[in-house]
Amino acid sequence: MMSSELILKAIAARDRAIAPYSQFRVGAAIETRTGETFTGCNIENASYGLTVCAERVALWKALSEGARDFVRIALAVDASTSVTPCGSCRQLLWEYCGDIEVLACSVRGDQKVFRLSELLPEPFDRLSLGNSPK
View 1 (cartoon, rainbow, N blue to C red):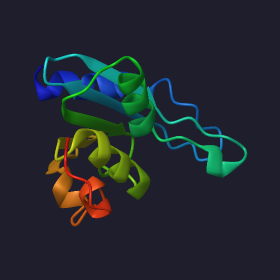
View 2: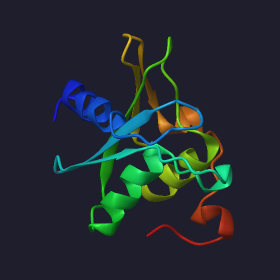
View 3: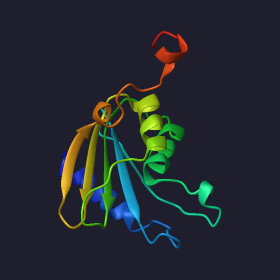
View 4: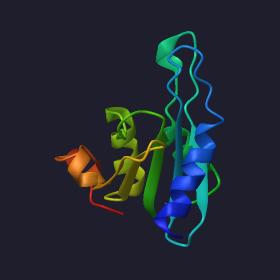
């Protein structure tokens, strides 16, 4: 899948966001090596700590459907600049996806591409626990 197609899926997912408190709607689309994609949107809760980010929704949907071997994730926001995943999302993405490509885009035109290792240097993972990789 071309990156632009993945971004369009993230933009479409953003339209389904439930953000009554922040009004900051985010969409995400994650892609596997075989081209399968899963989308997610942020879902807020009055108890703010229970709010879930779009990246985590997309990742959990993919994992729960048996998907593995991810290559990239796209994020879409309506802001003057693109945004990158929060710290919690970076940690989960590293755990289940490794050093994937992160496409950060604003529907207003700003786009940036990162490797997850740029956004999460020195990650905490199974090697930190003294376990060998799978």
